[in-house]
Structure formats: C-alpha cells, structure tokens
Image (cartoon, rainbow, N blue to C red; front, side, top):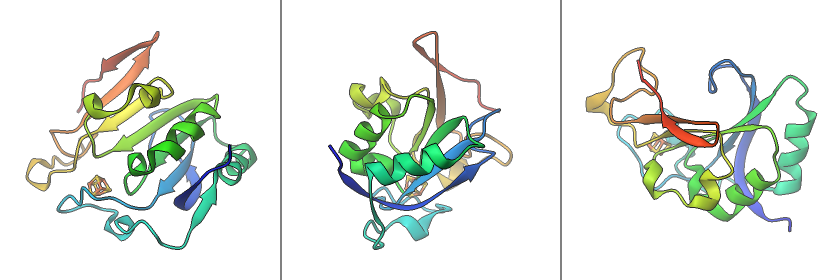
Length: 153
Ligand code: SF4
C-alpha cells in the first residue's frame, strides 16, 4: 500500500551511521521541541512536502553511493505508520534518530531497524564531541539479532 508522509529532504550522509554511507531521509514535524534543537526548522509537520513510500524508495534505490538508510528529523516516529511500512520495504542497514526512548518504540519498528539513537536533546547535558550529543541520549546497535547499548564517548 502506498501511503504518504511529510519528508522534507533526502540526501547522502557520511556522518550519521558510523563507517557507512547512508541515504538520509528527513521527516518534518516534532512535538518534543527540545531547547537547543539543531533542527527546529523542522518542528512544523506540514511544510508542503508530502511524499509517498514509492517516491522515497526510488530515492534510496537511485543513490548508488549509499549502503544504508538513516531516518532523521524532526521526529520520524510521529509519522509511525509510514515509517514502519517504509522500513519493511528496505532490506539494507537502517538507522533511526529519535527523541523518544528505546523502551517506548513499538516492536514492529525496532524489529525492522539495525541502529537507534534515542532520547531528547538536553542542552544542560550537552557534551562537546560526544555521540550522541547529550549525556542522557543512548545509542543501540543490533548485534546478532540482539539490541546492545553502545559505549558513548
Ligand atoms: S526530538 Fe530531535 S528534532 Fe525534536 S526537538 Fe528534540 S532534538 Fe529537535
């Protein structure tokens, strides 16, 4: 089924997944609204950029440089049905950046991801050169089918 979501941009990312080149999919809309958010321009959902799953899949397929896909925003999980359906249709390595906590994400979504960076950005917990940027944020990778919390530096 072809459904739509507000996607403002697709591009190539060299920095969002360690050691991979990704097609980055930027969703608009975020109700979390962290103080100090770097992407506050994407807080409003309707930026007149409605895109179909077919369109996004074609952008991923056309990107011959990338070996993976990363979902960013904005808050991708606020257009959950689209995100899950999109994930199910992508066979390569997939990563999600979300302001929500890992434990609050639906199983149907995490079953279809390989990497998750989660938690809201907190300006008072910001640490320069740390990944992710604030110390409350966590970074998980699926290793042999099991989600493993990574060491953050
Ligand atoms: S969750 Fe992400 S996009 Fe949303 S306000 Fe926080 S840092 Fe910005």
